[in-house]
Image 1: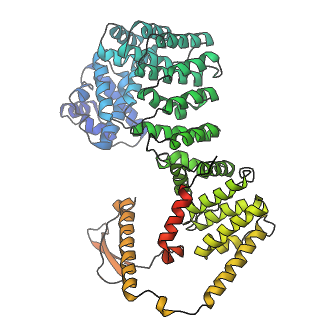
Image 2: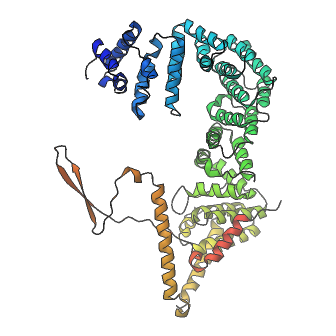
Image 3: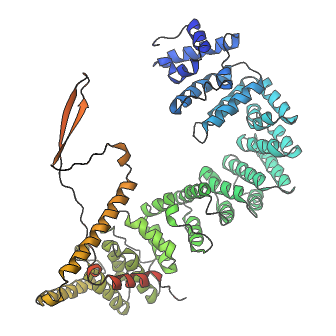
Length: 574
């Protein structure tokens, strides 16, 4: 069907049970004007009684469509829904069935918007839904929000919220959060309504709904500094249950305009009770914390994460807040510098480990330089050395990153402290890595740490010269048996790494895999469009990645591991 279907063809498609399928395929039409003509014709046939489009939902003809076909057909159906004549009960049942079939997809709520437009089209429809809900009809109660929105019935919504409970009250509160008040007095009256409901012993679900509605009102209509608003939000999050906690996390990113320091403090207080096993809430919180960073509320977000991950009553890690962490790492260097110093001084493993993993995942194989600011390092000499030890403990396998922290301290510390820090640079970083010299030698001549770093480089060069002067002592070399054991260990380790890399690859499922038993090229056969196969040859080229391992990993792996454990676990005495 490449032309606009006639009236007879549409009726035949309906009778044959194929109309929903054609909706999914947009009747195989490409021009928007042609598709609109089909929509108008379908509405006319339905309203004239020749076909019953609601039967497509009631018979599950639309719901049984798979994947994208269902959502395409639903999109077509929702476009014409506001124009269809039908009793409210039938329309609500169809809308609910479509929303249920949509599941958690972002398109799932589209039928609700179409139903709201249907109620707006004829005010009598909205009145019937509201009356049915007030009469106790469950289906109408679940769709009460859209009917109230269609009539912009703010006063009626307040009355229902106060007079009823259960679904009707929650629907009315949701509608109050969505409808724009005509003036500040009306807005204040809505908040007074919430305050009254709160005084009746509101449960967790009711608190969560009122909190969401209040945030929407603040973002849209009201001065967020109003004492009444701040007090209401504070009361709503008292003894927050899981629903209120989830809503608090959602508000942080969904209602940015409502976020003022007092409001944020109340929401984060509620989120201190987050259940780590509720991964949906944790994901919402991640987005919320990212939003706080982007909105300039750095201290609130960072302070919350610091307290949360410093507690022993949960097993949350920084890797569960990827959006927050990525924004933190990629944001202003001033903020990152402050956080690195703060978290290293606290010394909590989850904070330091999460931060090091996030930073190590960026930059080159040797890690990105991390230049800490002088004002952030304006701490005691003992704390400055402690920061260097932490950086080496957590960043040793990214030597440039570790060295950059040590250099940052060398720029501002006193002479006595510099001797201790230089020792860490010479006897650990330069001893283990030759490549770190490139970063150190590239420091600008006027760099405040240049002189101290040059001394470390000279000491390292003298050590290596003396080391090379020692003749080879064959008796100290490992035996062939020990060499073979080490090769087998490395082979097993590389095989495990290869398996993990394949398991985590986002591309592996997108390509066809084959195993070459010999040779250095592959041949594939593809169809050329004329029912013939055309050979495509591909020459194989070597590809490799190299990185430097610390020398102590070979010479004294146990000693290296012990040193890292000490540096990572030690705490600074207050």
